[in-house]
Length: 127
Image (cartoon, rainbow, N blue to C red):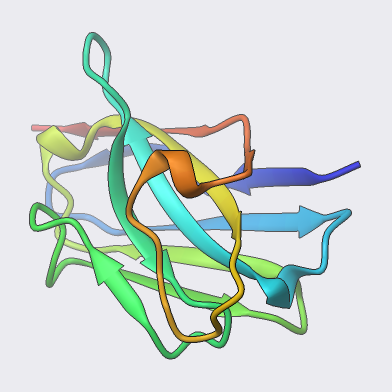
């Protein structure tokens, strides 16, 4: 059974940092592109960041580029999202997702490409 378990969310003031983690089990982690998405109340889920299977390819939403960094550790079956200079508009539930990908160096930005999803972790940024 595939499980993606996010952690690291919380309540922080604007300008602070958080690091989210997503621990994967039940799948061959290194064969999956990994991504982070977020959903704010009353809004659709949106792409945040993605990292290729080998960690060499990354992609970001324009709204987080330069502030967020995605990385992965295939030896620990874990993907991370380092979030710096947080803004109130970053407030959302953050979801980890896994995409079975034949290509080692490409990342995925579309929700439909992802096969498995975590339950989410809440990030709240106060102004």
